[in-house]
Length: 303
Image 1 (cartoon, rainbow, N blue to C red):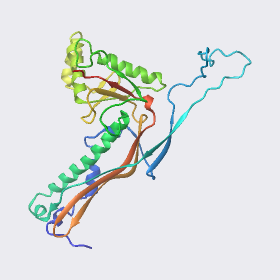
Image 2: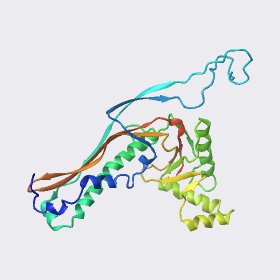
Image 3: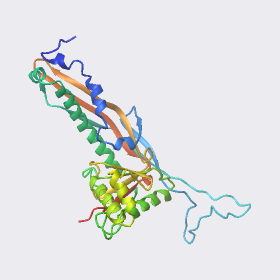
Image 4: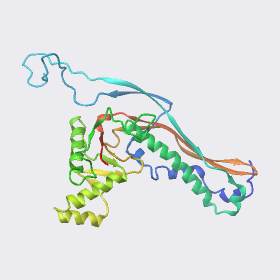
């Protein structure tokens, strides 16, 4: 067993790994809305079902469905479902702190170690959070924070967006998101609205100053609560990691799946006579199994 370096006995009672896991998901929140599970392999092969209701095939001159009003005594018409095989690879989120010298350990409060563990783990967890966001909005690898919806339901905000008092209609946009998801065969009850602080600000303004003027008690009620936590049955989640000019509606535990290959881990790396470094990592990958259970609203902030 290696003896403690000078001053290291002060941090002997600090469980670095426990601290690291405790700080995970502190401010980076997208992971909690995924279907979280583990994987024992770094390469994942999975199948993505074509979303929506299946029906009889259409042909030239025949576009109606043959499922309903089938003639008596006839065989049923065949309906088909399709799947697309996908391959995903685990990502490693990895960082370490600067060296904490034995001199700093000796004459500084031991909280310096806890602070570094927290900050390093938050840096790792933030990159995981942005990875989940990137998968949700189908961003390109080169521009991971720019929404590029392709397979999800998507559309632009009404007229000039949420920051236009005269033409913007956040409520109408949210109702359209709800409708589009329901039309694909998913129940959007309890679906979460993810947005940036900017969209939350203009949504609050719309409800209080635009609609609240015609329903005074509604406006005063929002002012008393000082925040919006739910609208039209959809919880509102505000995150700085979500890029402005876009809002997403997702069904928790359905739209996204996060596969953990290695759980959040933190260790101290000792250099005898020099000091200690804090190293943290996590490995996993996010996949969007049900893109039609989500809606990406774009162009919410104009100008």
